[in-house]
Length: 183
Ligand code: NDP
Ligand code: ZN
Image (tube, rainbow, N blue to C red; front, top):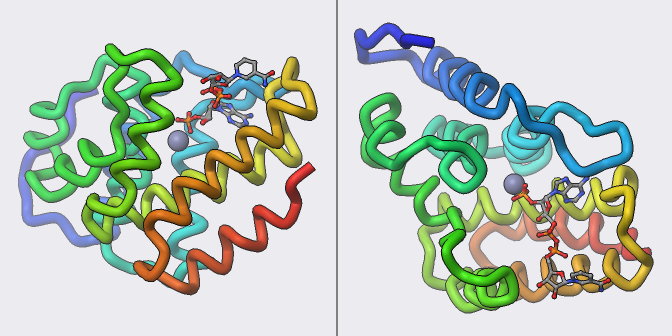
C-alpha cells in the first residue's frame, strides 16, 4: 500500500497514517486469545490507553505505540519506519523492539534490564504495552495458558515496570490498577 509522501503532516494525519500502516502490516495476524482477535486491536489499545487514560498527546509517542510491534512481529524494517515516519518515531519503536535472535527467556530478562535506560517516550509505550497485555491476560488470555503462567506473566510485567517508575505516575497508576487483577 503506497503512502503519499508530502509532509509536513498534521499530528492527526500522522497518527492515522501510523494506524493504517500498522493495520496493513499486521493484516494477516491474530492475537492469542480464544477468539483470535485481529492483531491491530492491540496497537490501537496501546494508543488509546496513552491518549485517554495517560493524557499523552505527543504524536510521536502515539505513532510509536501504533507501530510498536511492526519490526518485532512483521517484516517491517527500521529503515522503512524511518522513511515513512521519520527518525524520532523509528527510534522509539526500535527501543521497544526485542531482538528475536535471542532465546525468549533472555529477551524477557533484557526487557527488565533495559527498561530504566530507554527514553521516556519508549517507557510510556512500554507501560501501555504492559497495561494492554495484563488486561488481555486477565480478560482475554491465550487459550492454553495455565493459572501459573498467567501469574508469571503478571509478575514479569511488574518487574519491567518497576524499573521505569517515576517517568509517568499517571500511567504507572493505570498499570497498578491493571496489576490488581492478577489472577
Ligand atoms: P509469550 O511471550 O509466548 O506470550 C506473551 C506475549 O504474547 C505477550 O507479551 C504479547 O506480546 C502476546 N500476546 C498475544 N495475544 C495475547 C493475549 N491475548 N494476551 C496476552 N498476551 C498476548 O509468553 P510468555 O510471556 O509467557 O513467554 C514465554 C516464557 O514463558 C518463557 O520464557 C518461559 O519461561 C515461560 N513459560 C512458562 C510456562 C508455564 O506454564 N509457566 C509454559 C511455557 C513457557 P506482544 O504485545 O509483544 O504481542
Ligand atoms: Zn505489544
